[in-house]
Image (cartoon, helix red, strand yellow):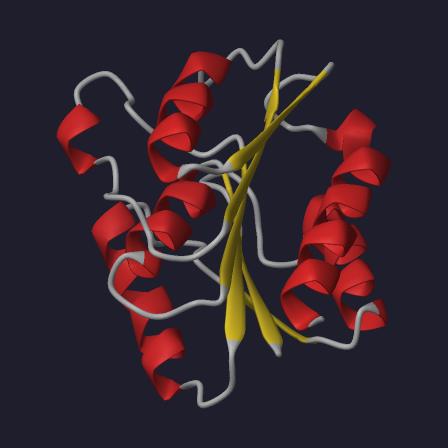
Length: 165
């Protein structure tokens, strides 16, 4: 199984969060990719890039996304066939872009969001999670979730092991 990471708007393909979570995915026996969206501010262009990755991938895959990357991963999950979707503080129901919030994917979904997120209200993840019948985990953190990476790693490990076994 492959795991493909989609970073947030202001981040890069191998930031702290992705490095740590990629190591956990590799320990679970997964191959890891992280797409580089730097310079692509348009979410639709990011969706297209990830969709191309998915259609060229022949093995089962899990999409993992953070913030705008979560929006991108969820959008692509409705167009392709991932075996799972793992989101961190996904950019859903943002003012002026509510109509761009993705539909509900047909795969298992986990959403992790910080109670103190100053960028994207945690209520947005609760709303999407309820519609998607997702596992939604709220953590005592902010938008970046850096201070709870260990807990997020445990959630990802549990999710991947559940999908693999």
